[in-house]
Amino acid sequence: MATITFKGNPIHTIGELPAIGSRAPDFVLVNGELQNVRLDNFKGKKKILNIVPSLDTGVCAASARRFNQEAAQFPNTVILTISRDLPFAQKRFCSTEGIDQVITLSDLRSRDFGKAYGVEIIDGPLAGLLSRAIVVLDEENRVIYTEQVPEIAQEPNYEAVLRVFKGK
Image (cartoon, rainbow, N blue to C red; front, side, top):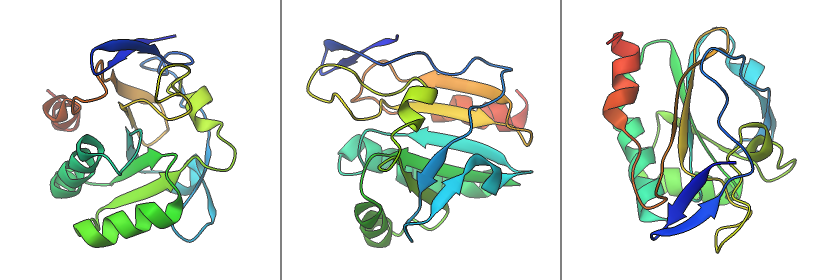
């Protein structure tokens, strides 16, 4: 269980992020066409999992926009923004914001992703949503970087993610 904060107040996740070097847990998430998508759908590519509570918040929207802008720096990589928002809302957000380099996926059906990746919030006003976190996977789905953002209202460390891809 990780302790994070929401507006300075402690809240908790169901577990911990996958360990660096471990194989990433498989997942089944829902895309904008209401189709199930698995981790294997992105086989052979690096993956940035930008996990957010809801795209309907300023910080979550900012992280999706930032990764969309930075996408050109990530060759052979897919950027997946994952939340429990409805796929309709995710699609509308991307259309409104001009997000076209990021794939949005929803944990609405199975709700297993939040448990498998340790990011489901289990108490406080955001219980049931996903915490803000980054997980980077290599082409073989090994975890090469993680960040559990300590305060929900903070953005992730984009520079650290960029360093992973620049080998620094």
